Length: 280
Image (cartoon, rainbow, N blue to C red; front, side, top):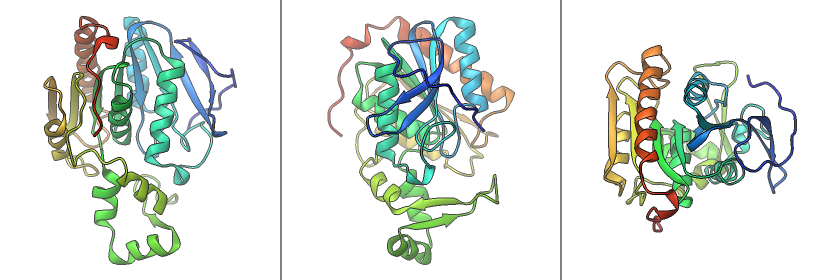
C-alpha cells in the first residue's frame, strides 16, 4: 500500500518531491513529482490501484533518467489520498486529474493512463486540449462501468444495486476484500461514456493492450482508435499480454512507446497552438 505523505500545502508548477494537494471539496490528493523538461508526463493509475504500482514507478524512473518532468498521484479513495474508492465517481476522478494538471504541472503534458486511468486520461484531455500533447493508454478501459459492470450484472445484482444502492463484487486479487460498487458510480459513468460517439481529440495517441486481458477486452483498444478524431493513433496488441502488462518486456515496451511519443511531441507546435476539442 502507499505510504503516507507530508502535507506541503498547495503547489504550483513542477516541483521535485511529494505532498498533498488540497481540493476545494475538502478532499486531498497525495502526489509525487520529479522536476524536468517539457513535455512533462502524468501517470494515472487504475481502479483499486495506486501511484506506487510497478508501471508508475517504471515511468518515473524513465522520466528521471531522461530529464522529463513527471507527476504520479493517488486518485480519490486510492492509496494515500482521502476518501474511499466506493465513494468515488468517474466525474470526481476526472476533476482530480484536472487539478493535478492545473496545479502541479506547467507546459504540455503526455498523459499515461492504465485501465481506469486510460478512461480518465481521455476525459481530462478533452477538457484540457491545449495542455495535453499526447496520450498513452495501457489496457485503457473507457465506459467499463456500463460495458463491463452493468452489462454483466445478473438480474439479481441489478435489483440489489437499484434497491439498496450498492452491490459487492468478488475481488480475485484480494478475496478477503470484495469491491463495493455504488449506484452512483454506474449512473455517473453513463454521463462520461466515450465509445458511443466521436472522441474529439487531435493529439497523438498510443494504445497498448494485451490479448490475454481477462478484465478489459483487447477489442476495446480498436474501438477507442476508431472513435478518436486524431489520425496519429497507433494500437499495439501484445498477444500474450494480460491486463496488468507489468512484465519486464511490457515495461520496456511501455517506456519505448513513451520515449517515441515524447520525442514526437517535443518537435510539434506548442500545445497552446493545438486544435481545441469540440463537445462530445
